[in-house]
Amino acid sequence: MIQLHPQLEKDCIILGEFSLCTLLLLNDANYPWFILLPNRDGISEIHQLAETDRQQLLTESMFFCHCLEQVFRPDKLNIAALGNVVPQLHIHHIARYTTDACWPAPVWGAITAKPYNSLQLDHMKSQLANWFDRNNGEEFRWMD
Image (cartoon, rainbow, N blue to C red; front, side, top):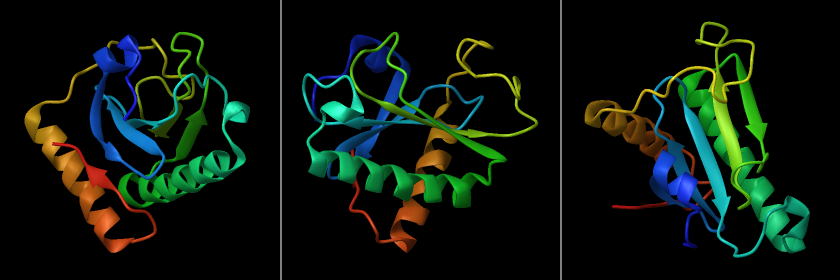
């Protein structure tokens, strides 16, 4: 795993790794908000990845999108690579609901982040682990 940008380190919980990307959970229980971080140094844009890495990023992102749809049943998935604050390439995957606190507006800075408690975090990990176990499409290694 590459070194996290300080903002990602401050805001996220490291869940584990796919073959290319580290999976992060934004520590904000207002939304199921995840980040895929390609483990490549010095990359700020998707087009800077080698072609095989771009394909792998898309594969991992689509696999995780299916997970989010089936586990969280969102009304909409928001997938974005902005990088205005954190230049290190990272792809946001946010499950959105018409009932969430800032629908239909963007989630960035809309409301105060609500950190996960240990029970919520354990439940989140359990939901993902169960789905990963049933859908062998990607190898995933959990971090301790």
